[in-house]
Image (cartoon, rainbow, N blue to C red; front, side, top):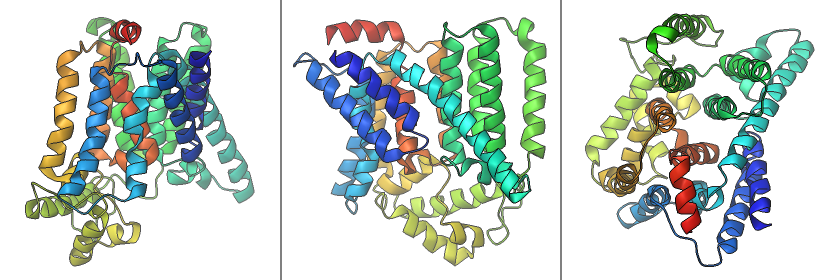
Length: 374
């Protein structure tokens, strides 16, 4: 009975994730507590648990050499603690919640876009950030729908025709949400997974057609600003997806050079970035208080090499102990590319998504064996 209730809580948490961070967090926390209680003292950690817990330990330990993280910051990072507890032996509940949540999210965004377009007598509600504002930030929604698509592709209950139609629905919403970096990351990860299931010769025409279609959408997709300049990253003029990231990375590197080992503290990263933006007269960054848009540089500024080393130990231990299958590799590639272009862990939903992705790099067979031991 406890396991069944835990499964319902996990499904509810996953479905609520794009809409209500607090409700999703409460459901995940309740699932974690129930999972721990139902183990009756027989619960034992597995390598992927340590990989996530070491991340929270790195943030908490950074208080020893930087300004202490606030309670709000620790609360935002707390999914690294309870996700392993809630997810143990709940792969099916997680996947089912993603499929239902992805369908509800896609229909909700499209429905809201239609209603708002009728009211405004314009297609603007379907363009870029205006489309995603109904739920969550567009890069998070892209990863969420990418995970939902992966869960749906592995599901055997859906009829093939319905599965294809639903996947096309997810793809349409992702394209309208307009996160170019997210689209690229999810596409590369999905391509890596797909190529592992068949021969390159058999899929080459489809792959080339898909790449061409994605490239066209990335270039012509309506947006309030263009792709940006690759070479001319002038802080005063930078407003594009690429040149703005170049400026933000340079600002982060300037801070890293001053405190490479210890960092500034996770709560001081944004004020320090804003200070550099003002010195450079980076108007776009000042107006929007932009973070680094690179999670590795963001962490480096916050907790330094010392804190990152603590997390790396846990991740390395997990990687050594596990046999990474093709699906896990694809998931890792997607998350890695997203973390290189977005500071995903600056919001609760991003931490839950990344923590869950790391957790699901654990092969299902090994997870069942260790789960029985627990």
